[in-house]
Length: 149
Picture 1 (cartoon, rainbow, N blue to C red):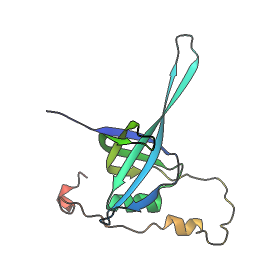
Picture 2: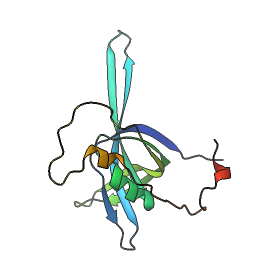
Picture 3: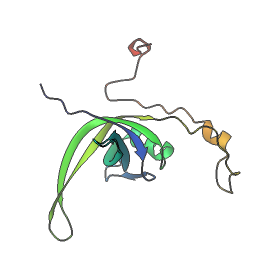
């Protein structure tokens, strides 16, 4: 048996942009930064940051486009996929991405003072009233009996 599964918990590095394929399927690419902190053998604190490319398809891509912004904490569950292409100079290139199967948003920032929204921006109360989005999956809708709680 083989397993290709990745879990990352980190912050989005830039605002994601939703795009559509020729067939109309929604897709979004974004990057998530994760860090690792440790003490070296001399007791000095060390930190290392990794950047992960994430690809989200379908209805989840629409949700990401609406609610995920730079700095949002996300938990991404997916599978690793490596793809190759030729760049402008004809060189072969490779990239490994996480193809998102599930995405969970982290907690909203709490407290702090914010300036009043400028023209065209939503107020905090408007942003917090997030609408419910129904997302059906190919395997069928979630039934109450499927919930673990």
